Image (cartoon, rainbow, N blue to C red):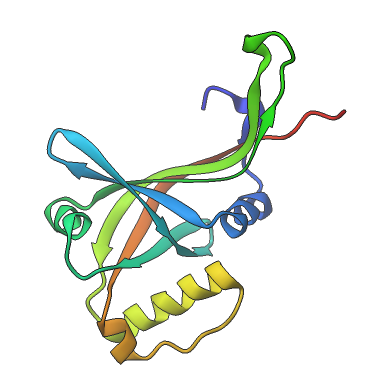
Length: 160
């Protein structure tokens, strides 16, 4: 990371970013070009290992891409605010917090595992616990991304 002064290594702060954001930008390999799709997500963090869960239709372009190549990239951001620079264009910037990482995407096949992942997703998105039956889980595709490496970065608003 080039800007070490903005690097976030505190696990509590990384979890706060994951809790505040609602959308992950999932990057997949599409031949010679990347394919990026925004999705709601749920996550679990166990001993520093990040796993993301997303859901969607059981067929479509992202599903085809995951089946063809599991390599994935994730980007999550939140707390974006303009930092004004007055009359000097080069003095403008943004406050933000973000997480980026590389990993492997897979489609969950087991309905019980899918239901568990969807419960995690709903808890992450709403803060509430929901019961998800295996029948409900069967109706959607559930994507798991095992994040192999990630970094977090933050720039806070300057004090006034």
